[in-house]
Every structure is written in C-alpha cells, then in structure tokens.
Length: 395
Length: 138
View 1 (cartoon, rainbow over the protein chains, first blue to last red):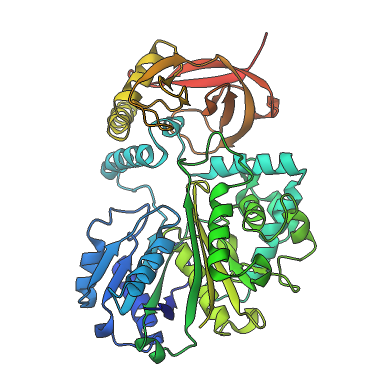
View 2: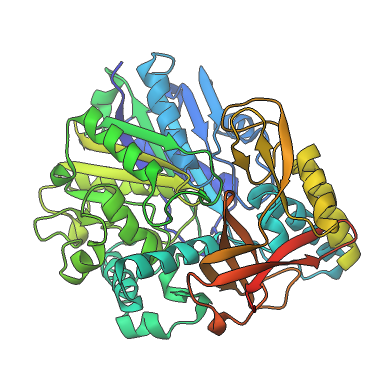
C-alpha cells in the first residue's frame, strides 16, 4: 500500500514542556489524528520515541501510551537511534503501512531535554550516579572518562577542521545563525524568534572554541506527531496528502566521529542523500526547501555540501550571497532550523517533517516558500555517524 | 562524592565495555597505551577488541602504540567531571591507530593544528588511568 502523510501536529518548542510528557504526547497525537480526518479508533499502528532522550527511561512507553489513548494496534514499537530517533519512528510507520500491517499509523515523538540538578541534597547522590553511568553508556567507556557531558566538543573540533580546511571564518559561521534566526521570526513553533546580528553571535559566550553560544542549538523540549495512512483513509485528510518519494539511510561503524575518516565530509550524509534522490528520481536542484539536522553552525555548512546542494567548501559563500534563503535555490530550514526552532533532539526530525509537510500544503503563512513542491528532511546521530534523508512531495 | 563517581564509573566501564576494555585499562595503569592487531589481516583496532572488527577473525594480539602523534583538532569543554574547567581535549593522530580522543595537557592558546604531541598518562581513580598528550618538547 502506498503510504501518505495525512496528518501532523506539534506543540511550540520551549525550554521545558508546559504539560506532562503524557499529556503533551496526547495533545499532539489527537491534533495529528484530527488533521488526518480520522477518529482515534481508526489508528492501528503506533510508533513512539522515548519520553525524553535524557530523561527517565522509556521502557514500555509505547504500551503505556497506547493504553492511555485507548488504541488497539496491529503494529507498535518504541524506536531509538540517537538524533535520528524520530526519523526512524516515521520510517517504521511508513514501512508498516507499505507492508499492509497498518492502515493508519500514528508517530509521536517527544523530548524533554532540560535536566536540572536536584535542589534537595539527598537527591544529588542518586542524580550523579545515574549521570555517570548514563554518560559512560552514551559516550562509551573511553571518551566518557575525559568528562564529555554533551556532544559539543566533537562538533567544535569538526567546526575547527572546517574553518581550517576551507579557509572559512568565525564570521561565516555566525552568518548561518543570523540567517536561520531570520527564518524563525515568523514561526510560532520556534523557541528563538528575536532577530540577531553577526556581532551578537561573535560576542556570545564561548562554549567550545570555535563554537560560541549562538553557534549552538539549545537543549529544548517539545513534541510532534504525524499520521501515515493508506487508501482509502488517505482521502479523509483535511490538507493535501504528502508522499515520501525517496528514503536514504546510511550508518558507518563509528560512534561520535569516525577516527580515521574526514571530519568535514561525511559518508553517511552523502550516501543517504544519493539513495533518497535516486529513489525519488530527483536532484538537489529540484528541492524547494530542506529541513536539516544542523545542530551547530558549522554542521549546517557541511550538510549543505554533503547533501549535494553546493560543492565542497562553497557553503559559506552561498550563505553570504543569500543562496540558502531561497532566491531561486533551495530554502534551507524555513522553520528556523535547529538553531532557532530549538532542538528537542528526540523529536527534532518529526518537527522537520511537520514543517516540510506544512510547506508542501502551502499552509505556512508569512514564512511560506512560494510554490513549494519538493521538500527534504535530514536527520543524523552521533557526529554524522548515521544519516537519514527523505524526499517529500505533494501526492 | 569522588569515591561514588569513581565506583560508578568503573562499574559502567565494565558494563558497557568488557574484557578488552578492562585489559586496556590494566595496561594503562602500567603506563602502556595499547591497541589490538588482527593476527589474520593486520588491522589495528582502537579502541582494542577481542576480535577483529575489519575481517572478524578471532585471533588478535596486543600492541603498544607510538608515544607521539600529531594534533588533528582541539577544543575546550566548560563542564567537566574530573579535570579543571575549561578542560582542553583533542584528537591526536597516532600512526597506525587513527585519531585518539584525549586530554590535552597544555593551555588552549599554545596549541596549533599539526603540532607534534607526546603521550603521557593521568590517573583518575584507583582502577582508571587515561592517556593525555602535550606538545613535544624535544
């Protein structure tokens, strides 16, 4: 069966969820189901992400959530693969519908990333225990011992290599953040909407050189949902249905940066893009808008190149000349991207899909990309150790 | 608190690592930085494995890595558990083993890409010693 995306829902990205994980997930689920023109009882597939990648464990969350919503399903799973998590939950739904195992699959991705150190001294010990074990599990029994607590240093070294290998400057990086912020001004879902300047970025607090505060996305919380249906249910959609015409996925055997490969050019992104474009019969030049998993300014530039939009080393000039802001070329991250939409990692790829679907439906108001017909969603995990690319088009 | 962190770290290293990881840290305690080399195809695996992740042969041998390398990239991190913040960390290219992620024992401002670096060791707990690098002096 041909799967179509017929419903979407999302809450604004904020530092913390306004409601509980369960109530937030329920709200976006019901929004997406309603948008698809369906009743909850018609959903027969459920694919969820953990209820917070850095939060408490998500063991059996799909079961608890299906129980809460009152869903009977024939396909159900909790999916996890780092930053690519929500993209693979979406892919699982597309696969289930394609295989005929589900006729209406619901994808719900949520993240609540801000974890505060407990105020009560009695709770601090337990918090530290969990944090230590969690960080060794996440960054591995080698890197973790150097105190790595976030992937920022890896991306900082990637940025340093990019500047070095392509004679780019910190101003070039800053311009990426400024451009993305301008996109977010008209996006009510975005966490950061106040315009910024290159000077603001350069003056922001150094985090891991050469990356400064405004070169980095924020730890954010949010939730999004998508409904994938087969005919005849697809006809009930309130907005024009959207087809996924090509998917590419590629993982290399590395965790937080291949220690023998380039740190400015990534096989996973290049390969995933090639597969997706080939399957869709499209080229980068056909893409009207792209929502990319660029969590840092330098990564944005690298992705513009690795996904095939610009030759290697030319992305900084493209940003400077406004070529990533539409102008007849692909509009990069009309939502504001990770740097301005905000980055609830476990849900980020689903926010990307929601933005592309809304753009292809022509439903984005003042930030609408005129005549958008072909969109691209990218997600990655680790430090581009794996990439996912999907091409979306009006059905 | 340091005792708790050390104990939990060692538990986690054993849980998420394994026999090859424990042998790696046992050798680091003796101030030896080692990898494993495949007896069949010669591939040097770092971090070490008890099999070859290239040709999946079962027989591998422990080898000492060179004590020098070149600086591929470096940065600082502002929140760290065991080192004084901001901690300098980097990737050092060691011949035959790829790039090692390690503590850099030098001020950030003194570092340049491509610098020659030399290996050192830092004991972080009773069980765990980790490699560090600093610019080569001789």
